[in-house]
Image 1 (tube, rainbow, N blue to C red):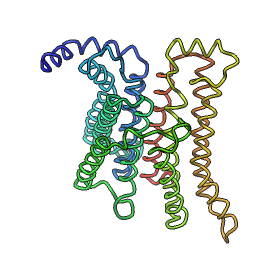
Image 2: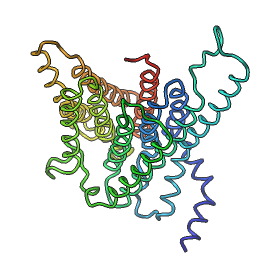
Image 3: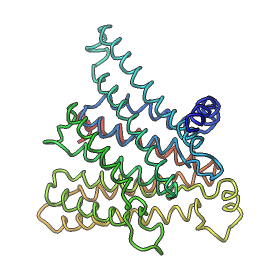
Length: 384
């Protein structure tokens, strides 16, 4: 019976792909998946690996959007729909890796290096490995979302936890090794195996069902999400501002990563589809409805306050010392800038229209490309 259902889904897969091709979200994720490996090809392998993992989670969540949770749809059909959505970022990563490798080989054989020609900054091998990492991370993120939704978790909480897991893996890849010299193939394989075991144990544990980011359901009390956010943010403050202040950017990575995991899915919800959209437009006296600008601004302000106050405290303490340290305040400014981006996206949606699915995908795709650009700049020494 299961084999027959799988065969039926495979037969209708071309139809599912054509249906999903009408969603702008999959094209945004496809474009980001093509651009990220190319941008990372101008950096170093040490920075490309963690950036590709983080970007893979972002493009996967952007493509998946609201997972199919209709009780009238069987698990095989839901898996087919999810696969049709994931096909686009996966295909984008494959196309980018293949084209990067071919273009790099042609440029090298053509002798275009040197003054006035191709300067050799682009590394086809790095781009190809980044594309492979992005594709693998995208599949892992989509699998996490599908498993959590199957177990009854809300889609937004599932997307938030998937981003958090992939972000944690990227952060471990970034900070592991001696002096951030990470990227050797054996270490990468070992990290992927350990990461897969950790993800599997997390999804099988009861704590996965307790995931609820802070400020989302205050009536339910403290949960696993609140504890994880608070603990890791405070640990990052102590570690990167006081123990190893030369790595102050570690706190910025943790705070910005948590903001993306928490604020983007919550500030741009589906809000009931077309019915919820009409309700928002007609209910002038209810500005705090899910998906409204007032609700999004409140969510963003709460997350910026939760994630930014440790850095603000550390920055104020540094001002009382012999030499002021700019790192903590720069980290707080980075989180505030992300908050401004989310608020602008929600405001643009309220003015121009469009679905939350498209707006959320646009924000996540932009963040994926921006992350890869920053990683490439740091890898090449263009960004201190």
